[in-house]
Image (cartoon, rainbow, N blue to C red; front, top):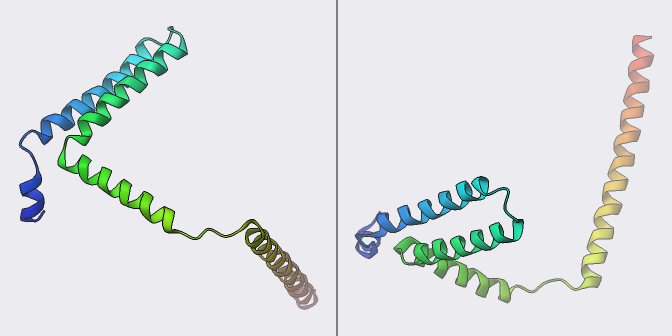
Length: 122
């Protein structure tokens, strides 16, 4: 790691990550231990634990970097020009047609080579 990245790291980042891991482990073990309880309660507790773990992870330097990356990725996705329905349909039909033509060509080549081998072998 370079000096800038190390300078951003807090002294307590390792402790925060241990808290995140402990919360995740508690969620997994608790979900297994309380398997007789209604599913709704277990899901609500898991969502609460995930929210707390996510909040704790966002307090670390790597968590903040990940959140920043996610925001930038969302911005980039908004810049993408997505194809229209007509363009998607046309492209799909072209791909299907090419696949069918290639399947016929390979079937014909396989039949021809099989016929030639059977002539040679007898």
